[in-house]
Image (cartoon, rainbow, N blue to C red):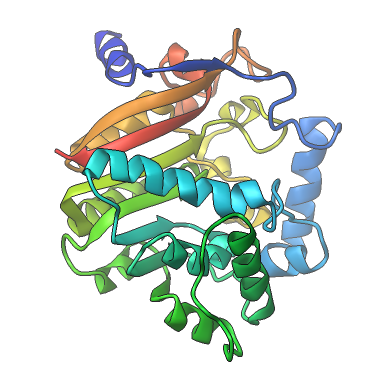
Length: 310
């Protein structure tokens, strides 16, 4: 109990924001119906790229949304520049998914070398979406490189001095030690399996420059309606391949545990903002023993972490 309290204190946010009503609720369908449908589709092979092709696994944001496409990287570069005392020259994004589209915009913001790492390749391969992203950037003052003559993604990434690495933590071995000024992720770390978190964080610490910065937003809710329904299940079920294929797996770590794991990997951690519920959201009255965590963590829907090498 004392250790849990100390962990919560170590993850105390600088700023608290009350979660808006309906946060991440999604379609107005009971969580158990969503669970059953997703598991059923995964069982018959409709998951991942196939589900996206059928329009059944769309992200909760539009990849062409200027706030997502341009505003988010502008914030990253602004904040990193404040912390570094200079603009970041190199960066790594963990789990970008389709947002590899931002490669030319990151180059336009001043990145001289960009790495993306993702366990699966879900980014467009044709050049068109990247050309459209670059055009959106120019409308918002970000002068992306000239992409004329780029026939596919490979050409766009080369023109943007960017590289896409596919695989787990081991894929980061392609990045030299201490070479990354800025490491970022958006609602990705909660999807990393517990056994992969330590290797991933070790690699992130290795590649981060001595004065580098990490900016990570973590979503601690279930992915069935924006509550805590994921805490009702055993690890045997929740960590099963079927749940993984269904796209609803999250590692169920709370804010204090996530911050503690980064500290063990050699980072100094500051929780700059937490989006919190005023009372415990929908979920089991008593979590499964495999999903127990400090009570304070159950009130945190999302949080933003800033990392510096410790």
